[in-house]
Length: 454
Image (tube, rainbow, N blue to C red):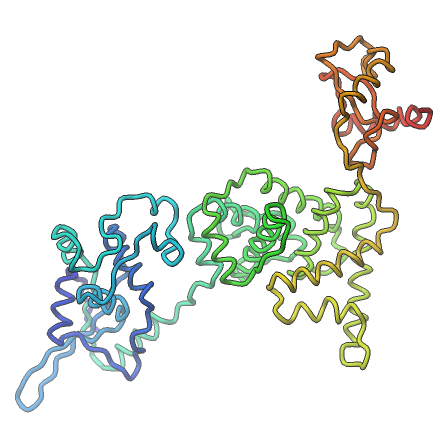
């Protein structure tokens, strides 16, 4: 096989095709399969000076009845050539990044860039743009094969690379949501994306073998959390829905409050379930645990953390027991109301909601002693004044006098631990003395008697 690299213009390729010098061997080549949208994106790429992949052409010379004929058989590049030819012949108009937003789905930085070819076919473009299209240089590999079998073998080798799966394509999208999922879900082959330990230790993410599955799960979990906090509802997490979400959240802020909330939930789950005493989490289990912890962090005192792991183990045992009854006349409820729904339409919003309602109900049954937080977190003006005067305007931490504009009221038993927002659980402190974190826990242990006494 002889190989020669050449540069040809789009005009050259079109002239070859119009004159019948580009042929397709239908014995091993597929026909035209690109959608119109794919063709539009290719032309848009050319107009934006994006480089295109190599085109491979087999130079075939035949002599028949004393007549010599030369052809170029397309080994790789058929779909691109068809797109170029179709546009030049007026078969379609290009995307308008704004008007065709839903179908084009261009990232934000492209939507607001100059696009004088928007919504135009070849004939309606300016002469300058037409010239730009026709003069675009393409890298072409000319082959002269010693045997017709070489061309087929090369075709097979060019097509044999494993195509990108859906999540690997999303990883190439611009935008904040892509960055957030890469950071949380991890991409082991890239040092800066090790991923959160929740996915490495609890979901059992492997390096290359996962091929994006863990990042897709991470994206689905983040979608469900964001949808809940923004709209109080569930959302489909099918392939198309994830694609649409990536597009809608191109401007997502990886440092936003909801991003921090997601990471905090993963931290909590890792600390409670990361003891290595259970198998790797399945995707649906990770989803429902994440949503449950979000609920518990919002509404209940932190005492639930001591019982979550045991409750989840109990749930798994009951699930395994009921799975054995799935073919019996009266299968168990863990099969009929949960596991069976992990097999049918499992990525639909209504299915996820139904599973989660059952999961939440059972987990709460297995977690006795849950205590709801006081819905009122901050002390009102009357309560502040009452506590301030009751405490003789004295700081409970340093013992100094507190000026009104320095006043803060501290929950003796922290609100997060179920402490009520009422005078008996509040004390006067300086703003600078207000206990936080471990200091607040120590303060609570030494001052609980105050709450009881009052």
